[in-house]
Image (cartoon, rainbow, N blue to C red; front, side, top):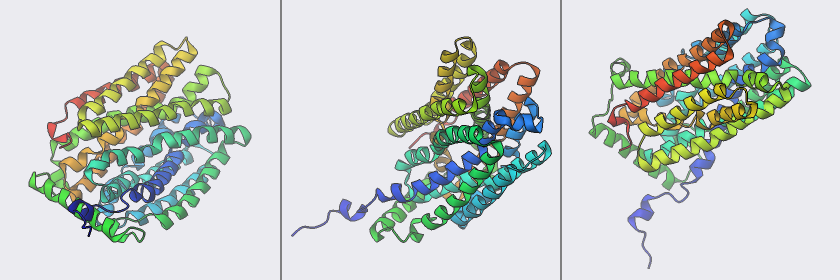
Amino acid sequence: MQTSSPATTQSPPVVDLRWLRVIPPIVITCIMSYMDRINIAFAMPGGMADELGVSASMVGLAGGIFFVGYLFLQVPGGKLAVHGSGKRFIGWSLLAWAVISILTGFVTNHYQLLFLRFALGVAEGGMLPVVLTMISNWFPDKERGRANAIVIMFVPLAGIITAPLSGWIIAALDWRMLFIIEGLLSAVVMVLWMLTISDRPQEAKWISERERDYLITTLAEEQKAIAAKAVKNASLSEVMADKTLWHLIALNFFYQAGIYGYTLWLPSIVKELTQSGMGKVGMLATLPYIAAMFGMLMFSNLSDRSGKRRAFIAVPLTGLALCLTLSVILREQIWLSFAALVGCGFFLQAAAGIFWTIPAKIFSAEAAGGARGLINALGNLGGFCGPYIVGVLISQYSQSIGVYSLALSVVLAAVLAMTLPRKCEQA
């Protein structure tokens, strides 16, 4: 007569099903948000800047003002995901993204454009803290680095999709249809999201009882362990007094300045470097995002296996700064310079999944929701500063000076990563 071992009774029979039922809807939704966010990077060199009569500094402002609006729903979104329904929050957000994107296709001046970009930032503001909290609801700590990395892989995936799609739509139709078509796609994704996702294992109908019990027990034990180590379980005001929180915000600020400065100016840089039309620019711009997928997987796996978080944030940041610098130094050798831009892609998001494992290590689940919101909201002001400063430097000096400023920002982020306290490492 066979008896079940304790390990067999404790382990769920279909543990891998979570990766198939939870991750894909989140990734698809995040891809849509990123497409709506960066399509302006292709629209500007594709005719929008000329038709609206905007300068390089105004292009940078239009790209960056998104992140001012992005501030408003970060903390409410993170708290709602802990105490309410992140599913409904993102469902309404998707509807807002769709409407705002379609309206952007009808703008006639830069004032309308700035308002709609700001509104898009507000509508997208709660997305990342909500989905990261949902990941924490579904994946134990030993899997969370990989789960975060797969979700944050929406950035290169969105780039791989957006670059050729945007180039093709602009070449075949015009920049206005780019916003209208991608806005309609957001509405389709909203339906998919509402039909497939669940906030927590307790609410999912597709999960087995054994797997549900396993997840609830494992995640509860993690919270007990966090409480035993005196990790912060505090009000938002007390969390804000934590020095490590502000260290993470500063790191994220300089990192996001580099990421979005690069992302929003990449099509313009590639167009000027290669003297190509938008169709070819769209195809070339996919290569850095393909490289980004490999970088994210490699560094997140190395970090999860070794337990080292600080080093595997700092190393890709240093690589990104080096490749940004080489893309300028090698500018006379067109394809070597472009290869350096692809190298930037490899390192671009490699630190992101690792970075977002840290709040759950130093705060309780309840406090971590608000902490993620603050880190993302204030850190993403770098997403405003990066594109805008590059635009101003291009107007006043040259494109090369703008790229050097991004490299400097990323170096500062790498230094901040190495000086994080030891409690940020995996236990």
